[in-house]
Structure formats: structure tokens, C-alpha cells
Amino acid sequence: MFYFLVALFDFLWFGLIDADHINIVQDKERIEDSIVKAMVECYSVEGFYPSNLDYLKEHYGLVLNEDLYFISYEYEGENLMPNIYVYRKGEDV
Image (cartoon, rainbow, N blue to C red):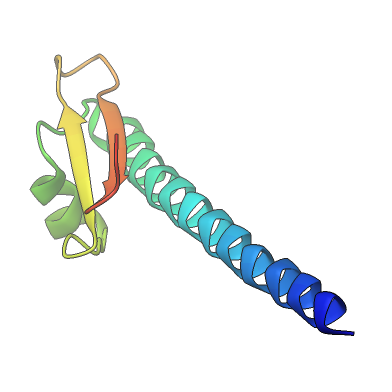
């Protein structure tokens, strides 16, 4: 009976850890998708990709949780889509 309880506890513990990891991955994907959507909208309306995220925040209502995530926005030019990388702060890269 004791081993069954230990096995059940292990199963639940590792299941919760895995669920937390899945949520982190999904949050990062949602952030990236939101940024891309705002960039594409800007490009289609104004004819250029913005040089920074602040432009998207100010003109396209983009809201980001920068306390929890580090967001790298690599601007290469008005007609080239910037590269976006999202990292959770404290996470190994």
C-alpha cells in the first residue's frame, strides 16, 4: 500500500511539473503570435515594420508582460519582418 501511495504521489507531482511546462510554452507562443499579428497589421496598414515594440504598444494596443518575459525584437529594416524571441525570465536558454 505504501509503494502505491508513493507511486501515486510521484505520478501526480511529475504530472503537475509537466503541466506547468506546457503552460509556459503556450504562453510564449501566445506572446510571439500577438507580436507577429501586430507587426503584420502595421505592415499592411502603414507599409513598414516598426523599429521597436514600443511603436506596436502605442499604436496597435500590444500589451506584454515584460516583468515575466524577456522579449528580443531584432529589427532589420522597414520591409523585413523582425525576428522575435521570447524567453521566460529565470529560464535557462
